[in-house]
Structure formats: C-alpha cells, structure tokens
Length: 537
Image (tube, rainbow, N blue to C red; front, side, top):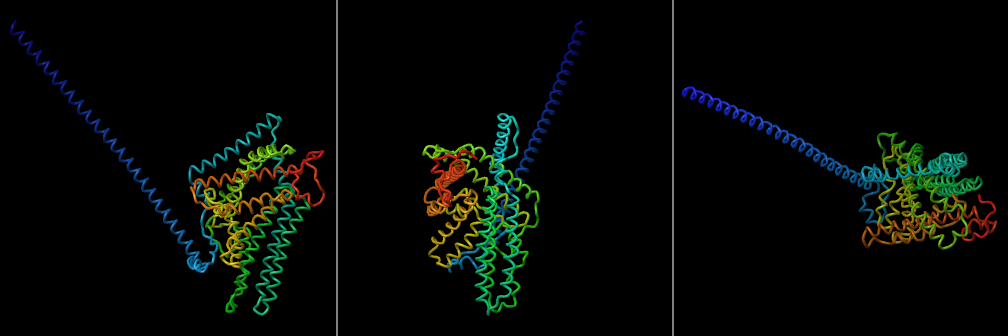
C-alpha cells in the first residue's frame, strides 16, 4: 500500500511538472507573439511617419521651387520693362539728366485685382459682395410678394434709365463712323501729299481741320442728346463714348503728326511708314488703352470663358447699382420738399448716402476698370492689363489719383502734363498739374451735366478745389493713419455727391421753376423749393 501510494504521488508530481512546463511554453509563445505585434506596430508607425515626412518634404520643395520661379519671372519682367524703356526712348538715367519725362511703356502684365483673387481672403470678400447681391434680390422679391402680392421682375428703373437705346446706338454708329471715315483718310492724305516745299500751308490746313473736327465732335452729339432728351444712363453712354473717341483720335493724331512733321530729309524713301496701317488704327479704337502705339504686347490665346464671365459680372454690377438706387436713394429723395433743405435734413441725408455712395464707387470701379476692360483685352489679346493699381492702399491723394484709373491717367500724363511741361518748362510742373486737374474736372462735370440735364458743379468744385489741394498733403506720419484719412475723405465726398445730385434731380421734378430762361438750368432748384408742382412726376 505504501509502495502504491508512493508511485501515485510520483505520477502526480510528474503531471504537475508537465502542466507547469506547458504553461511556461504558452507564456513564452504569447510573449513572442506580443513582441512580433509590437514590432509590426512600430514598423507601421515608422512607415507612416516616413510617408508623412516625404509628403512634407515634397510640399516644401514645391513651395520653394514655386517661389524661386516667381522671383525669376518677376526679375525677367523687370528686365523687360527696363529694356523697353531703354530701347524706346533711351535710358531712364539719361532722361533724368536732361529733365525729360519718361514715356508710357506697354508690357505684358496682369491686373492687380486678378492677382489679388489668387488670395483666399480677397476671394472671400468677393463672395461677400455676391452674397449681398443675392440678399438684395431676395429682399426685393419678398417685398413684392408680401406687400404687393405679386412678383415684379421688370426692373423698371433700369428700363427707364436706358430708354431710347436705338437712338443711342444710332448716335454711336455715327461717332464710330466719323473716326473711321474722316480721321484716318484725312491723316493719310495729309501725310502722303506733305513735302518740305508745301509743308507750311498743308500743316496749317491740317491743324485747322483737326480743331474743327474736334469741336464738331463735341457739339453735334450734345445737340443730339438734348434734342432727343435721352434718359440718364443713355446719356452717360453717349458722353462717355464721345469722350473716349475724342481722347483716342487725339492720341492717334498727336503721335503720328509729330512723326510726320519731324521726319528727317534723308527719310524720304520711307514715306509709307509715316502713316500706320489701317488695321493698327482700327485695333487701337477698340483695345483698352488711350495711348496710341503701332504695336502692343499680345497674348497667345483667348479664353472665351473668361470673356463671358467678365461680361456677366458687368451685368451683375448693373443690377447691384439698381438695388442701391432703389433701396437707398429713391425712397429718401423722391418726395423732395422743404424738409430736405434744413440743416438737420441735409446732414442726415448726407450721412445716409455715405455708405451707398462709396459702395457705388466700388461697383463702378469693378464693372468698368476690371470686368469690362479685361473682357475686351482678352477678346483682342491685349497683353498689358494694368488698368489700375492698388489705389485702396494709398496714403496720399496724389498716389490715389495716379493709381485709381491708370488708363485715363496715362492719357492725361502723356498728352496734357508732358506737353505743358515742354511748353512752360520743367520748373512749372505744379501749373501743368493744375491744368490736368482742370481738364479732368471739366469733362467729369460735362458728363454729369449731360446726364442730369442741369448744371450743378458739385463734382467740379470738389475735384478741382479740394481734390487738387489734397495732392499736396504728404505722408509725414503713420501710413495707416493717412490711409484712414483718405478713406474718410472718400466716404464724405461720395456721400456729398450722391446726396446733393439726388436732391437737385428730384427737386427739378417736384418743385416749380423760378424762371423759364436758360438760367433755370444753372440755378439750384433744391435751394429755393418754395412752390411745389401740382403734379409730382
């Protein structure tokens, strides 16, 4: 029995050892499996980290390469601009030594706003303006549905403002035809038959004909506009196109007349080059510049999608302007009466017009100087798209006037400022600058006078008076403070313009005339609105 018990205990101990070895073996296997799992996890982490490091490195290299290429392109553009300046009229240093002002140079370059649209923050501002336009549209539609129980989408104010459009197109065709059938043939004949022997009499005849033509081009469309009583927007189209044609024909005549008159005697065999080809003249009439050159930088292709997009933006801006007048101008001034003449009424109306007036400035700038100009530039493959600069960052009014409308500024600088400086000398440049402001103010006031059918020279006084005085203010303090001052002045000026012209426009509809003579067009009726009309138009 004792032996049997001993054998049983021995077997029992063997089983316990076997079980213990088996457990140790399982634990060892689990440990190996755990180690392998940890190794795989670490390998995956290392692989993911290496992949992310690879992507970050490639992205960094791509950004650095893009910056390097952009810097290289900018350097090439600066070199091209410098080369064009040097080739065309000698080096800038030589001009500075002689006191001669540099000429306008055309190079291939995009507009400032197009470059800004590449920045996400600026695109967001653009999206905000689009959202405001959508809200305006919804507001108008809901008002019509809830208040008038009908959906009115006829845009009656736009139809009225652009009324008699067939007559506008007929006049435009006549103006366009005169520039094609009179200006170029007359210049061609003068340049072809002019010789050193008969140059004196032919030059007098040619200059006299140019003066007569420009006077006729000013007066005939004006009489046509008055005779047919064209509404405001149609009048703006006529006078703006009239001014554009005058500036373009003056540029073409000024550039090529000097070429013919100062031709050297030994260049008689090159008479054919004195008069540019008609195709160059025709291209100049439609391309978005007012300074004539025989050749302009051209792009390789045309993006018709870009053209359509810009024209749609012009249409959207037109609707935007309609909403501004419909919501902020007409309700305030359409029932003009003596309450608007008081100091309280005037101040409230002026401050109420500051925001919509400045918004009108933004939209007009974007519609004309960006969308309209870029659309025609793209269609004509016109390379130089610098129609404006970053005027919104200006800290002086002199810089604002130079950068706000580069197209008109180039014409004023080339044919008014430079020519007057040649006549009176470089020391009298403030006088030349005053002449530039005077001519610009006169034509701005001319357009407004023809638009509203009354003479109320508010813009002329602000432009030629306060505007000219502000150019002598220099940035002696903080740039940010002077930029704020410029914007405050713009807000106040736009508020005054919109308020005063709106008051006078509706006063002439709601108040009786003090006299039936021509003086009624020059006496502000909004100042003396005592006897209201029996019927409000």
